[in-house]
Image (cartoon, rainbow, N blue to C red; front, side):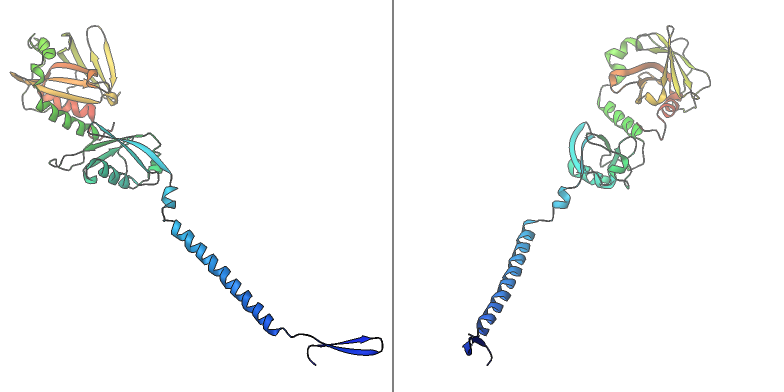
Length: 289
């Protein structure tokens, strides 16, 4: 008798029938399975919901960035960029800001910025100033040093202005006439620097000045009757010159000793054949800022 219970009460045996509940057990089993399935379904829904919230940009949002100041063509631009971006990627960002194609950019930070290294490797930090020198669409793409590029831009600006020798500040010196003891000049010629100082020229105040190039010390000596100023060639930012009208075999020349044109030291009646040699000696073909 499956399901019956035999009890002994005193000397009598009593048989009690128990209710069979196989269906209830089966129901409980089904309910358990259902609950388990619902649990998995809820978990899946939660996962799906979580996935729909994430847009995949979390990794980008967490990237370390740097804030840079881009300087190009006298304009300044603010740029935020991941610190692990390469120099090539920086050029693309500059292109987006300025419209200047990467191939026409020369980007400088303590020298020419390499395209294959990251900003982290170059040790660029927040607030860094990035100088960009850009060629115009009509310029011939060539490898130039920053100082050479600046000099080209200065020449272009000078062509748009009144000739320097006609400006009042220079006329008062030039009107004194050519110095008697000036060195002979040769128009259209190019010569190396002489082994002796260039002498007999005037400075802005009309006093006599001589130029001595101390190549072994990398210095330019500006000598007057009163004193001699020893200037490191690497500190000279730019050199500009212009032929003197009516005396094209001589030039007027300025050495920019500081960050602005206000620091220019003017020298008048420089023999034309030495102008290129002076510029090459001071600026150098491969010298950076």
